Structures are given as structure tokens and as C-alpha cells.
Length: 75
Picture 1: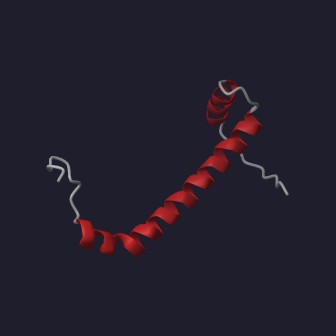
Picture 2 (picture 1 turned 135 degrees about the vertical axis):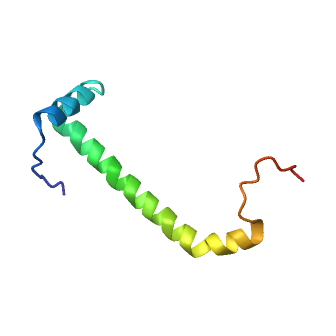
Picture 3 (picture 1 turned 45 degrees about the horizontal axis):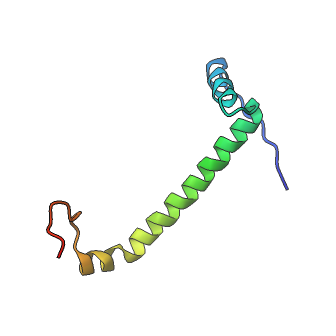
């Protein structure tokens, strides 16, 4: 079920939102919804990635080392 929220923006922020929406082309409300949804998805992804690094990072570093491998000869 979709929910509706009210967000107050400055005139400058709304104008930027409106211009960005026109490039999609979407109305400002649909564009704002898309941007918020994408940000929430991004935050969930980053949170999951952080938990993965915390859980498996030490074992990975022990097995493969901590360097980027840049400049190393592939064996």
C-alpha cells in the first residue's frame, strides 16, 4: 500500500527538483518519490555491505591479504 507524506522544500530546492523532474520527464511529485525510493534502496544496500564486511572481512583479509593488488604480478 502506498503512503503519502508532505515535505516542505525551499523555493530554490523545489525549482531544482522541478528542473530535474522535467529531464526524466516526470512531474515533481513522481520524481521526488523516485529519488527517495532510490535513496532508501541505496541505504539498505550500503548497510548490508557494511554488515558483510564486518562479518567476513577479517577472514577475507587473512586469506587474501589487505592490499589492493595493484601493481602485483598475476600468478
